[in-house]
Image (cartoon, rainbow, N blue to C red; front, side, top):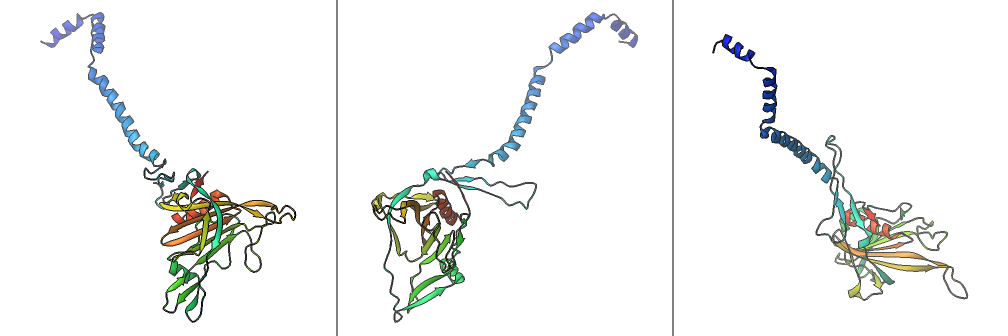
Length: 294
């Protein structure tokens, strides 16, 4: 068809027919274009979720399925914009999973008589103590207001003439104040010390805690995969009434016994909160401070 003929044909088409053709063309737009646009939007949503969701999950605490004691370890978080920022984590201990047994008494077993013909008395300094026990025995957490006793970091041991250690009990104390001779000081309102002591041994502790319940019924609490036996006793303090012999009042005493890295521990805490005692024990087992949830 020549150009002249084409112009004649187009010239005979009315505006009405052109509008009808345009309307028909819009109505018959292929359906794949509509679904294609929806698919593109969905792809944007998926990409956004994939990039955001891991960061969100990394901020959430998880409870390990093999941990029945409610110890919650938060997933480590770091700062991608600063490589020098250390990775941090938090360890939570739930008091709901800690059992306290009623204490009947604390006893001190008979000690070996250090006959110089048979035994040698050895004085360990801090370095010797760390070498023998394989680590510094100071807990990672010390409650506010408590300070270390003068004798911390030293111990008296006994060895036979062959050099075998037969008594190795080490002692550390952390109390609110001390007398001039270094012994823990009594508080003004309560005639008792405030703080805690730690006794350790690789051979066997000479101190024994007697519980009210039979031995097979004493409950333990798992902290960091270590069985800890906690005890509690309400302790009286004086002065006592001369007629009724009633004490002036009572204070809390807590005991914690466990074994870690081949070392037996016994902690005796007086005038302290239960949460503080659990936090001290946990800091020894984890080697760092933990958060105790009431």
